[in-house]
Amino acid sequence: MALVPVILAGGQGTRLWPESRADRPKQFLDLTGAGLSLFQQTLLRACKLPDCGRLIVVTHNAYRFQAAEHIQALGLDVDLLLEPEARHTTAAITSAALHALASQQDATLLYLPADHIIQDESSFIEAVTRSLAAAQSSIVTFGVVPDYPATGYGYIRPDQSSGDAPYPVQTFIEKPDSDTANVYIQQGYLWNAGIFLGAAEVFLQEVRHWVPETYQNCSQAYKCAVRDLDFLRLDAEAYQNIAPQGFDHSVMENTDKARVLPVSMGWSDIGSWEGLLKAEGGGNASERIYSLNTSNSLIRSSGPAVATVGIDNQIIVVTEDAVLVMGRQSADQLPQLLQIMQAAGERTIAAHSKRYAPWGSQTLLLQGDQCAVKQLQVKVGHRLSLQSHRYRNENWVVVSGCAQVTVDAQEQMLHRGQSVYVPAGSRHRLANPGAEPLIIIEVQTWSEQGSDDPENDIVRYDDDYNRHE
View 1 (spheres, one colour):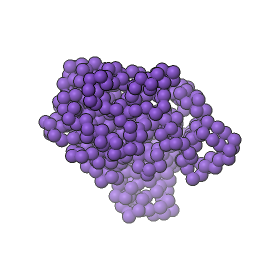
View 2: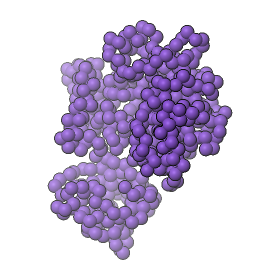
View 3: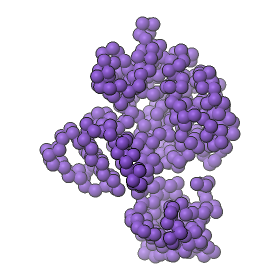
View 4: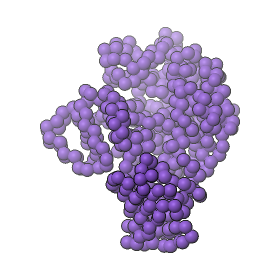
């Protein structure tokens, strides 16, 4: 029997705006000050499990390069499955089970969300080890013993009258109000951690029984999957036919194979800033935060200095391009606020000013009418695609490092202080052949015809990373 951890890394975590956004969601952030993203912490935690097999990671196509970079930074070698569209956990779980069975007929799978905190890893490992025998014929989930009446978690009612744990699940319950949550705690209900353990074949049997269309479409998507660099791309045509469904609702609430093991392991899904405050005990997350007579508050800044005087029960989160100030008692209204901002066309809802690419990163410094200024940082030995723009002109100025620049048929080397003009329509490429990161200031201008979507005014002719979007 091989224990195969499966990391589910496709979520968006919008309740942690402005740090977590669609282009860089919370699993790829260091929210705990550990120097590692939540995704990396989950990977390392999985590797500590006894008899751990080759890890499987399932993520959205849009996050493939972020996931790969975080994996490579740890020196790990994993199987990385790409979802062409977000279809919730049932599709991800089914796809991973099909992949595991393709190489290991006796695989036991442990599904782990990539964005959770588990502070007591020894208790977590003990709980998984204790449940392995039961998991050969059941699907075991882990119910966290509550330490406060949380309204942001689902609950599980175990049937403790039937012998030893893991217990049969009597019922799954959606997020309650505060009074109901207090009753649940008194009656021995558990938080639903969304972690599942079971034999791959059992997972597939239950999906096939309860949601046969999802099983068929996942099977077709996996059968037609194609290899792309280090990724396995699930087939888009079959995957788009899958109805988005959470595994709890589609299978666990229906099957008679559901079991739950109560566990205390310092767990949190960090589903909100309030959740992070409770999990981490609060405090300030920056050396440039200055507070006087400030209490019961979470203050974070990855951008400018923040100073507070005489505030209580506040959440303040500052990034390079956005500021959130929110009373803790109003934290559940953040999704409503984000909807208002999105309707107004606020660009910071979905994207950070600093965007990561497989070749490095680009940071938006200034945005104007028909112009923009960016800082590009190119990794050693990497290069951008050979590309052109229909309406956009670019000026590149080397700040540090050495740039190999191709504009149409002309190739040249540029050093600090030197620049080059790239007119619209020219085929061009930027590479870093040096021994240090290359930093470029890019000044963009474009004609009125390109004003609708200047960021996507790009035609690629050759790309080291097989990007087509």
